[in-house]
Amino acid sequence: MIGGRVLDVTALEAFATGRPVYVRALVWAAVEENIILAVPSAALGRAWALLGPEHHAALQVLLDLPITVIDELDPAAALESGLLLAASGLDDIVPGQVAASARRRGWPAVTGEPGSLRKLDTSVTIEELP
Image (cartoon, rainbow, N blue to C red; front, side, top):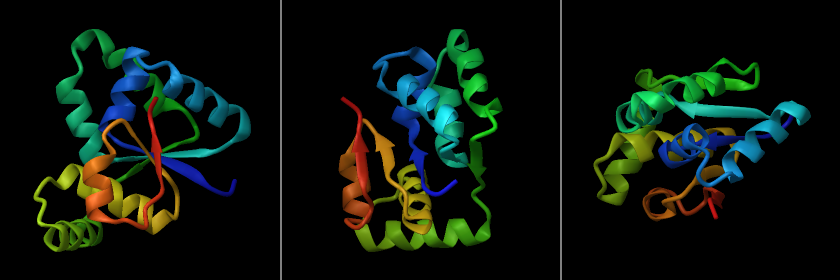
């Protein structure tokens, strides 16, 4: 198991709603190939808040997969995310944690909104949703 993807809020929403279908295809391909999907806890919290209850079961399916890992916003992750935010002038911890997780892991961040991630860290590879 080498490599993986970091899923941001837009990727989590896309999986749960099935729009675009790209993320569901990515997840099921990851299951087949045993590729890890990292979900930053700040992004997960925002996704739960933004998704209607009718999509919560689908999000739970993703979380229950054996390839899904949760990147907790522990003190070290908060520091790393906060430093990225301070350097960029942004103040939203959610993309901050996504960028920090992708940078630390050396994996692409899957997103439908790449602007803030690029502003936070230009070295993070972005896999943009279609």
